[in-house]
Image 1 (cartoon, one colour):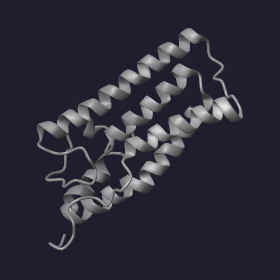
Image 2 (cartoon, helix red, strand yellow; image 1 turned 120 degrees about the vertical axis):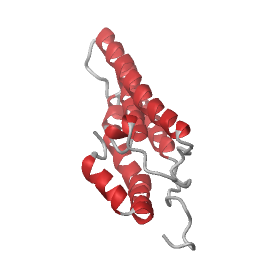
Image 3 (tube, one colour; image 1 turned 45 degrees about the vertical axis):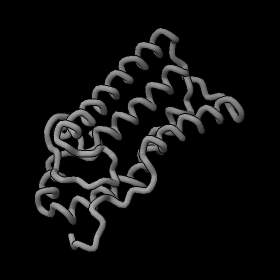
Image 4 (tube, one colour; image 1 turned 180 degrees about the vertical axis):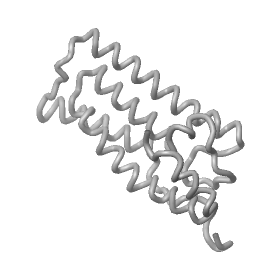
Length: 158
């Protein structure tokens, strides 16, 4: 990286807003356009929602905790002083985003809203386009082969 370049990824849209927008859009579609209920018994839906939310919170929360313990800011547009490859980052290069996708899934299950569930992959594509590709380009420029080796050894999502 040159000294003229900003030390941070060119992320302009906070990824949590993408997942939140998908939940809102899914709710509006369900209520005002065409209901798309999930055909699962209520007890099963709630159980799956609780388990999925727990996994999402555990994955995302552990990643945020690890960032804080290593002195990093979880905001993707901030400087990254080192590659984090321990904890949840051994399972996925984007545990916070996977955690948010799991939370969106949990909300869809809990509310029985098929639109919100169908929008999970859309959210992930938007997060890739608006955040991940910028983060990866930044990390490749800043850390070179160290980051490329990490990319080869750990999947983007799961």
